Image (cartoon, rainbow, N blue to C red; front, side, top):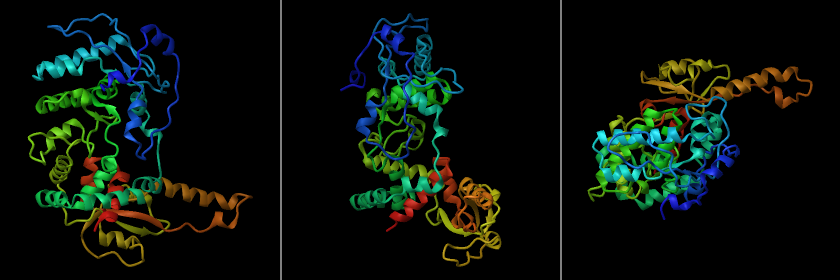
Length: 412
């Protein structure tokens, strides 16, 4: 079944009637969701593409039906494309621009026509792109969601299922099996969640939205080149709302740069071939400078009054210097006295909130003994070179710590 046939059509008149409606959408969740249901949840608007012409000209509004199932609520500060207000002229301009760029880059006419044949506008993708900062977790909350017993158990099953392949990746790229498994678990829950949306539709929607138009145009062009090279139908490619694909959720430009044919079939398929996916992940980490002889992080305990301005991961000191500031191992033992450099990361928001609550509690007439208990010691993480290499994959301290914790749990 094609992506366009999944949704019932309504006429342009219905679009005008429904455009004023606002549908609230639940905040983004980090926890994996079943892929089969998520495609339906995308709620696309199927818009007919203009007929290809020899030169770029203004194209009249199509007479074919437009489908809209859901509109998103208006943002506080809308970007170029105001959420919920669909602009046909802008949509067609986006398609014309993509056609011109793709033609200039010698992408085949077949792939260009397939890409621009009735792509769907997905309002929920616009919402998710504009509201990413609204959903936040403490570090502990994030780790509880991402490094949980179910995910660890799944990772161990995969280790037992693919031992030879994992050893091949390790031998070729110097990336340990438990590290590959940690990235696989974090990125797609071991392949359980790879394709929420048709990638073609996601990219055209994000280009139309306009917040990162150049970036997403580059991603769509890269995806079109991949489809050309593999002889694939681009409309068959699925991925995340932000355009990541496959077992390790590569964006198209990353796949083009680091993808590896791991099974020797002449194609690089990081969605359908676990061999291609693992080899590509190993190659990417290797090219980022991965050092299998270094740890990622080390959990430490700090004094309750430690200067949190040092816990940004950017301030680097020797282990001896951190020890002199009061850092110890969780069991109270001293840190190794060496000149090895490391940063330090902790949940400073949670630390400052706890300090504020402790300071306010004594003046609260309803305070009880537990409210005024002494501040506990601070849990933090020493961050080594591999930590910063992970951040080149995903620029998040929480993500890098989760990779480290999951990798440690899977280390056999």
